[in-house]
Image (cartoon, rainbow, N blue to C red; front, top):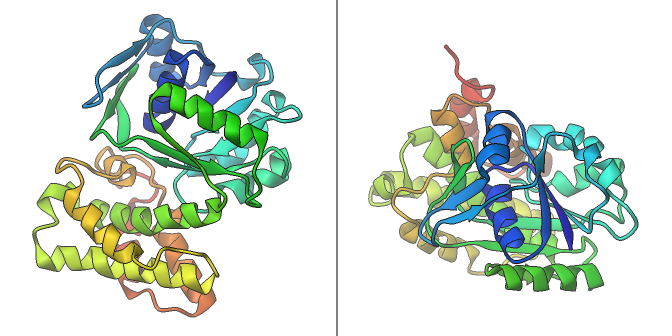
Length: 307
């Protein structure tokens, strides 16, 4: 199977390397020093699952140089969705599946006007990984899972095919008939966790034993769940309880990508996370007081370092 990975950061790099090592024909689209390192030395993923080195690595900064593929793992930052979506049009043919693995809940709907409804599936990446240095992805913890599915919930041959590729690559894959529910389930956790951890600038291990800080997680989860239910999204009844349990068991050093970006002085995905919660709260007339404060406090850093 031919696979293009658009954006070879923590998510695209880790899953792309696993798929390539399992025999898929994978080409990465990246840029800058990371691309140069991949071309010169290959792409390495290091972490508790074991170190894996893909060398040589097929990589380019020009999607148009790649022939049409069977699957596209679309892993760019949320502010690049439209521009990157337009750039990958040459990769899409009849039957090609584009699987967005962004944070947030709206990447698929933003891609449909660009690539067409038939091309776009829904996807959720569950992994903690980031670029440690050019050509090296560092994973925190061992959890590595992709959830994907057709947006209308129908079973499809390409969904079954990609599920088999995940199994062969050695990570957990789920071909879901309710990918919108899966997207929102992740959004409940990610919107909250990214905001609390970025606001405090500390990893989970230094936050979860403080009852005042832990209350922020509980209140944040409850606010996003209320929005989801108001939108008619089917979520598990015990989601908030499980989310709090997960927060207590995440690797102590783990930080969501938005918090990592904040510490590095990079642009933040805040408009599609905390700001999205605030906007939906106003639209649906559901109070989101915890997110109102977290968003306001993080907003000055949304475009990167302020000095």
